[in-house]
Length: 148
Image (cartoon, rainbow, N blue to C red; front, side, top):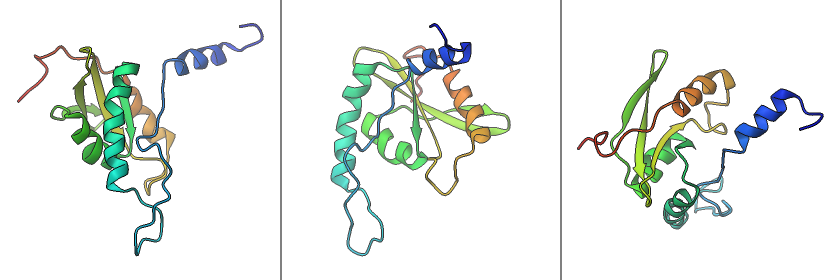
């Protein structure tokens, strides 16, 4: 690409292989009685759970990074019937990921990190090693990787 710096070309090549979506794709305008800020409804969570498997089957990702640990543990995991949690480490921090097998047999690894809008804040120096280690995980063989 004429006139582009090498770093720009590399960045473009990397982002060409990423997709992003909101798990709940409609507006969060519902206010429950007594709530100060908008919240999500069970219908919105159910709709998101139905929408995710076809999206993953169409995109065929190898790794899915969920922003929000509660979202992965309570919502995505139940909607996708994920495997047990498998450990991996970054430094002295113990993390985990799940596996899901798509309709065409593709293996997808899923993990989560704290959402940047949460009370934990966004710190690139904290996120980067976790994200880098997750995306470096190899895809397991089926079904020998599955336990239970």
